[in-house]
Image (cartoon, rainbow over all chains, first blue to last red):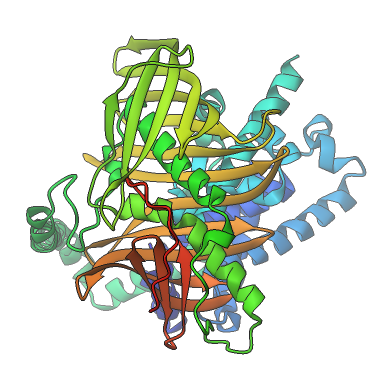
Length: 174
Length: 388
């Protein structure tokens, strides 16, 4: 879906057309989900954040300025909610949640080790690009459009991130 | 790298969000209930709707098929593979299908960049009387930089937008290498840029396992461009299976003896089969390294817009991104390139007239500039000034 089409769907939603939600969600939920997962590092928590994100976004759709990249807007909400989620959990579990959450049983749904490693060694944008290119099935052109960056940057960061991840994996295996 | 990609893909389902999340959101927002309430309010409508659904889907499917045929058939009938598009643009990338064609393309395109880079600015035709971008107050030094940026890529752009495909022929091996290949890269003015590649092929493995096929071979050699020799190396590694294919390819030409400065071209290729259709995405990324540091990165890709193919270059340097679209054509019998994009944060549009020894840039406001063009296929190195 091109950004223009997404904008039209968002506008339809704003006008009260609930049927447009499916298209908006399908196109944007993975970037939002991975933005949250990078922070909370737990599938179930990331899904909770995803749900909160869309509920909040849909209820404050009037605040979205048309044409300013809806995906980026929804990702920023997801990040903010994920950070709140993390803070809340930190208060509840007095431990080093960032680094070793799973060791302390604070993770309810494990994410595979490779993904945990990716979240630890990659920068946020590298992580998001790898997840969108390699996991979510988006073409690099689509990722570029979603994130509002050039295709060349997506390609470059995707390759660099994969190399970085490979090196980290080899180091861990050694 | 492929292992990492494979591992990530294999575990994707354990990471991706559950489909129920969407339903939960819709429920919380009242979207699903809204539909149900509507159906019930019409009494009986729900049941009738259930029966009608397959008919509606069938009708929608038929309509979609008719529309698709109406839209796509004329395109397919008009467009033959590997022939130039309506504007005379040929998608050269479509012809790069194996290791040999990739190395030939790598040698030709890197050769074009190397010869452009080696062209001293002093050899450029004298600047026109005035050159100003729409922001007229901009200093001319800055304008020079902008035009210089474009000019360095013109040989590559010409090659990629030429009607001619890359022409290769075997030549006698030299310099102790096993193979020799002469490569012609088309130009819009006529004539070919010629580069010669002497190389050894290094087979690194390959296997076929059912639908999966892997191939990997490298080269090491020497590229001769405009009389200058550049050591080169490359690697071609592809993996294909029923659902699609992946490849990692690079071709690198060193510009210093320490081998810390070089121009590298990498192919980014993705092909996926989905619902019986193959979706292919291909682009070439050029990286210029000096003393081990990346100083410039350019992505070349074709973009189809309104039935016409355009070449898009995205140049990243010093933290700044320039994006230029090129389309070839003719004006008053002259070969031209129509270019548009952003340079220095400004939207610009200009026409490049491709003339012997000169690129003549004409901007929207009528201002112009002449820049040196590497002469091709002849020995005329005179810089006779043509006043425009």
